Length: 549
Image (cartoon, rainbow, N blue to C red; front, side, top):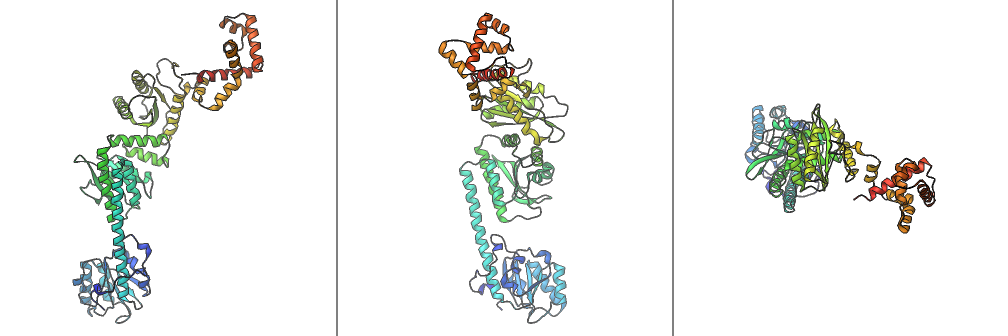
């Protein structure tokens, strides 16, 4: 047997295990190769260490092979050079273990037919995997196959690393924001990635192989027991891979890669991904003026308002990870609709007003010309004075704005309902209508028939209904210069009283009777029918809101 595997013929690719492609080769991977499986390998000791990485394969028939090793080698031997005495065997195993050999494979064909007990004991004591081969194996062919696999994987790793650098360079060149950067990191690594600030608030979380709930539950406590670290390294009880994120030369926060599933170590590519993530985030911080805390609040607010979370537990975990109280609180959606000023300025102003009022809240622009806030209220904290103050302040600056609220909810996962109700109230707010005394904001209780029809004014079915009910009457007024529509309105407003209708229209009883008969003829209806009067009243109300400007 040759002592130096470097004299072997060029590596071959036959018999390679495609399952190992793209990752370091372990002892277990080598044992699964067909070229070694023919020898009927049996693990005698060190079964718990078969995940050791194999850097190279070394064939040896020397009594001191360790002097030719550098660590990580899979040592192949026929057993011929093994010392006869137990002390010599222990020294042989100690030298292999001290140099960091991955495993020892001994062929039980020539000298031994069962492994010596002294060898078994020495390997078990030192935790060195000992594998026996019951049948003859071509060691040279083993080295060719394993070396081809190792070199191929190294080349693949270099190509993947290059692709990682190219991907993050592309993200930076197109001005990607922090959400895109963190999402790309999670996709590339297949692991959960979290961006947090210095006070351990999780601003962005991209789960992979887990849920937001699993990733963020009890986040602040778990993060605080994980040291900050000055460079990329696995730290803390959960062995998170962490890399600091700087801004203008000072530490701003850190990006964290979670072990998924727990306990699975990180490879060089994970480190590359996270380091490039931190670099891309630093550049994004310089090119995106909006603070990431505000961006995180806006994103969380939109997810809650549009119910984009995967589960109620995910919503609660993300909310709490932002440093907001998700338990023992009440939640209220507030919307400001209408053109006010630049979204970022409006968000900042509203956030400041809420801080002055002592109210915790998520604030963000939900859509163009629509600003939203989710108020987080203590159990005994009244919300009406706060909302009234906000509404009056907004209306003083922007009289055309519409401030609306939903109903209170006790579960953060139910806030989408409160936002829907606030949106319905805003959509039904008829311009120019006065609210009850002492109130400057709209709520669901304000929605009556007129408000409901105003909210539905763009629905063609409402428009068609108005035309079908009143079109002939309106056309008659236009052609003949009459005012029958007004007469009908007075009659319906008077609940069918002709006397009251005549008085309101300054008409005689004979005139009102004549006009109403004309209306009945044109509309082919009986105005004595309560149902028909209701239909016409709805149509008139809809016509009014359709003409509202």
